Every structure is written in structure tokens, then in C-alpha cells.
Image (tube, rainbow, N blue to C red):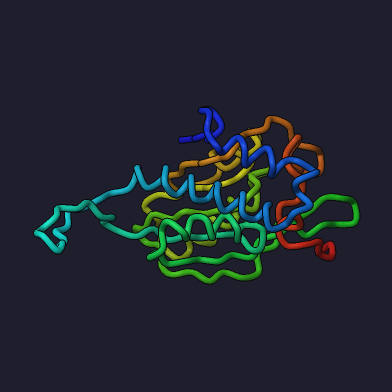
Length: 217
């Protein structure tokens, strides 16, 4: 299942226009906050797909029958770029367990790159719903490798990928190679991917825009 949150008119379009804009991107706090907002919207939409149970709650005047989550999801994110999206998801799923994965492009002298994954901290995800956030779904290679490493810790019930911008090439790659049941929630979807693996028009390097430039590795 692929959900483009920009298919219907909403404030998502307003936030994406700021995330993409070179003029607004210089405000790192606003950039991060807009990513958080996208995470919050995705969390609300994903919450509609989860399982619920009835719970009786004592109020000052009686007993109320409420519906609550049957099981909390596991929130996973790719360091460092995914932290703002992750925070938005955490605002809604505030009782969830968490997983953190360090996955990045390790560039070669010829301009190509490999995906380096050096750190994974996660609970067991056996039978769990996992919500994995990363701002950009470009080639899809880092997300597939991340999912493979997470699956070493258990077979998830379902994985929800939450991204700000996705590329059709990356979506197709993830769908071909990911073995788990998978849904992709994207703020918007672009069609073009450069030879170096960057989304066009995209928004640039989300990690650098959120947290500052880094030394190239």
C-alpha cells in the first residue's frame, strides 16, 4: 500500500512547500518542525489502521467505554536525518518502544556509494507493528538494508515506512526487495532520480538541512 499524503488538499501541502523552498530551508528550526508535523499527520493516519480493544475507564460521574490500542507500535528511525520525523511520530505514539539505526551513504572516489550500517539499537520486533521513518526514499537501498537488519531481531507483523519525499524508483525497489508486509506513507512522491541517487525536485539533503553540514564519508 502506498499513500501519498499530498493527493488530497491539506496543510501537508503548505508544510511541504516550506520544506522544499530554498528560502525557508535556511531556518533549521522551521525545517525540523515541519518534518515533525508530517510525522504527526502520518501517525494519526496510521493509527486508523491499527487494532483496538475496549477498556472501561472510571470518570468522576461513571464508567466510560473507550477504545485503546491493543498493542503499541515500535518506532524506528534512521540516524540522523530521521530524528525530526521520529519526534513527530513520538508525539502521538508516546508509549511506544524505539529502535535506532545508523545507515548512510559511504561515497567512493568515482562518485558511487555503498550503504554503511554501523549501529542498531532495537527491542525485539517479533509480531510487532513497526513504524520506520526517514525523510527521503530515494534509491531505497538504505531502507531495504535497514529492514533486513531489523528482521534479524524478529519478524514484524507489519512495517509502515514514513517519508517526507519518495521517488517512484525507490518505492519500486523497496516493494521488490522487502520481505515484510509493508505500507509507504509519503508526504509527496517525485518521479526523477539523478545518476547519483538524488530525488528531483526533492528538497536537498534533509540531514544537513535539519542539523548542519557534515564531513563527507
